Each structure stands twice: as C-alpha cells, then as structure tokens.
Image (spheres, rainbow, N blue to C red):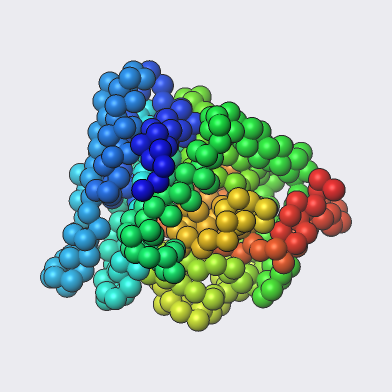
Length: 420
C-alpha cells in the first residue's frame, strides 16, 4: 500500500478542482470518462467522491457523475448483434452539450485497458468509433473553442498497470502506476499547488518566445523523420493554461509539459516517424510512419496496427491533415521517468508530437469566432477526429523557419536550443 495514499488522493482531488478546472462558486461540475461521452471508470469512485465533496464545499450547486464499465463495453463487441454498432447513447452527448453550453466544468478520467478491444472485429471497432465521433461533433466544437473549462486526468486500471509494469509482481503494478501519476502531477512536492504555478510559468516563457517569433514553419529531423510543418499567419502558441470564452483560466491536462499551436492544413511535407506506440480505440499501433505531400498524408507504414491508421485517415477529408503541433523537451519528467504509458495523456507529454485531424480554434487569432470556411481559408483544419502521435526523442532536432526563409535552432537533441 502506498504511504499516505488517502492524503495524496485528497491532494489530487484538490489539484483537479483548483489548478485543473479552477472551479468557481456557483459552477456545476460534470464527471465523465474517455472521449467525454463515456463515463468515469468504476475504479475511480474513491477519487470521484473526494472531488464531489470538495466541489460542494467550494460552492458548486451540482456535481453530476456519469459512470461506466469497460467490461460492459467489451461485452458489446463480444455478444451484440453485428448490425447494431451504429447505435449510440445520444442522451449522454446531449446532456454534456447542455452542461458545457451553460458554463459547467467537465473532468474526464482516463483509466482503461489499452488492449481492451485488440481481439475484436476491427470493422466493428471502427464503426463504433466513427459513430461516436459523429455524435460528439457539437460537443467537440465547443471544446475546440474553449467554450467551457475541461480537464483530462487519469486513474489506474489493473490491465493498464500490467501493461506499463509487466516485470513487477501483479499485486504491485497498480500501486506503481498510482505512484507515477502522483509524482508526475507533482503531488510529491511540499506544496503541489505552488509547484504547479512555477511549472506553468516556465511553460509560459516558452510559449511567449514562440509567439514573439511567429515562425513561418518548423523543420524536424531525426531517425526516420525529415518533415516541414507550415504555420498559419496569426497562430498562437498555448502552454499549460487556457481561458474559457467566459474568462475562466483552467489547465486542461494533468499532467502537462507541452506548448502547442496549429499547423497549416495545406503546408505539411515529408516523413514523420513515430517515437512511441499509439493507443487508439482499444488497439495499438507500433513502429509507424506517415508521409505528407501538399498538406495531406499520402502513405502510412506500421509494423503493427497499420489498419488502425488507415481507418483514422478514412474518417473524413481533414483526418489526413495536421491539426496540432506540440513541442515537449526530452527533459520532461515523463520522458525522464523512462516509462512508456500506452496512454496519450502521459505519452504526449513525454515527447514532441503532432495531431492529425481537428485543430483547436483558440490556437489561431480570432479562430473561435470564425466560420468554418474562414478558419479553413486561414489554414485551420477541421475533422471529426483529433489523434496525437509522438515523434520527439533525444535525437530530434527542430529548426524555426522565418518568413524570409532563414533558419534558427529551436530544439537540439530534444531540448530547447533558443535558451542557449
């Protein structure tokens, strides 16, 4: 058993409410799970109860918890009629949309088996995933505009812990994953909230530098990678914190180590090799690369799970274009932990990464108020999907390309070079 586990769980709840969501008196709180429409994992109940109690103490009039069980999801793929995978619980998405539209805060917990659906019919997994994405479109449009405060956080799952720590005895695996989550969320610090404020300030310094530079493009070189990503005029680099349209400052990911913006949807060229596996829809993709020309993915290769990538790219016209560009130094505590988490929330904060699909509207000046046509004309990408994959390592170099075509070192061997 982890020493002071209950105390650390209390601190985690406090961090989620005060730093993550910055919950305000009178603000409703919704607790959900992965992909928002899913519910919180049953195993998160001890943490969720702490969050609910503290939220009420902070003045929330209502804490609404959506629960879920990954085993019943698996049972659907094992036993449901094969023609029933276009069905969807639309009441959940409507409820979330109504809450978000009214200014409620939403926390989503990740905590599932990364291989949950690996043995199921991939065509049915793809159909279920696309059905979910279609029903979540209105909700995701609000999220991409920061219309409300939202947060992704994690709780362990036995199968996830076993995947991350296969060499530990089974009875130690889940505790080891809890310890990693606590440490990487800075809950081992004497004053975790103060540690987070200092960390946020460091990330803000990097985003400020990049916003002042306004590079026209970034050029990546590393093992299997020679890639140029164009950046739209008026792009905005964000770091740990964002502001809702109503002016509430929140931190959408715990943990977070990145600064990020959007790429120009028509200006991506070259090859990108992934530096970590991708867990998507309960299936893993490993040792893969994507080739871009004129902004679009033209070829994919993977040692395992190539069909998953091709399913993602077939989602719609924007699925094969760059949405997000994020920079993370290799000195990130998550990278330095040496742990591969098989979970995007953690792995994307261990390495620089790219997301294909939907771009965050708030990463373009005035993007929240633009029509879809104007956003696209400015270089922003739209899609039903937003899929992050990691490309950074201690062997990655990145140059910033200015509007006159000159190059400046931005990262060398995975570390910030502009500070030297």
